[in-house]
Length: 377
Image (cartoon, rainbow, N blue to C red; front, side, top):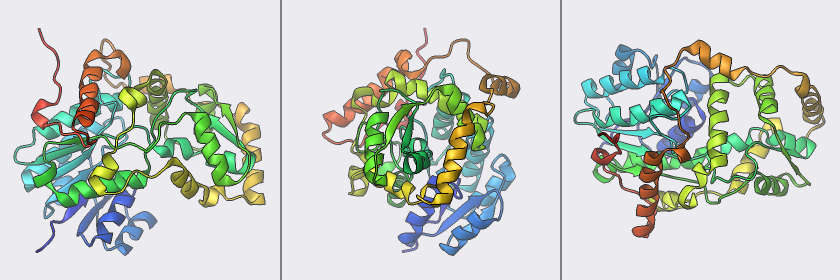
């Protein structure tokens, strides 16, 4: 029997590329969407994926990309106007007759969250629900392990592990596990997963100091956890030329983490094992993969570079994130609330976690028609 062709957006990114690898390893036909032809897209072609170049904000280009595919993985753009790209995709999915879309959402998805991305994600969850004759599946991971391991070179080379979130905990999930989750949902298809929502997490609730201890075991020497003030974080991010929009979002998610959003109702699920037959990988396994990357190798050149960067960081200008967001002119609700301050968010997500416990499984079914709505008078 011919396998349905799967469209993968965000295919040159960290989770998207890993997803294409997973699907091609199981011999599924894949069409990968890229913004341009470069080394990353050529690597996708070597995996056996068909690569198409498309502007995700352009409805016609997205229609051409979707045509001829049956299932799709949708990764929302981490950009200020991601809602336009999502609507372009929704129209394309309807017009091209797509049968199933698996969408990465957020655990924080909320209509009045302080970040524009999270507010728009809440809308995308509901826009995709409304696409006629297209089955819809959500998976909404929590904190990404990638957020905690971007600075593993400091630990490997200088024995310092920056801690941004104090003593608050989360269960960080790896890019590879998110890809395994998405691949399973796409391969098993709408017959099993239409209308459902899944919350995959890492295997352990950890705070920054516990992560530092694990990283020390990985790099093979003592590592000291050091609290990193947000202003220093903004300096490091600018030095690394990370998109200021991403940093503006992450700063808000740091506050969510400190308030307990990512440890809410226990914080850990067994979704990875229930979906894929294998448990989520440990933070140590994920950290070891990052420590093996060239930037973290314990060489003289890397160590000198890390010492230089560490020395100049206090003198480097920080991102002005508030000013940056003001210039974007994104709409802001009259009242913004972090997740733990939002009764509707707490009720909906407590129910999702409790359903997992009650069913003695951590795979959560939330029919699309019961996604929480506004409470109206």
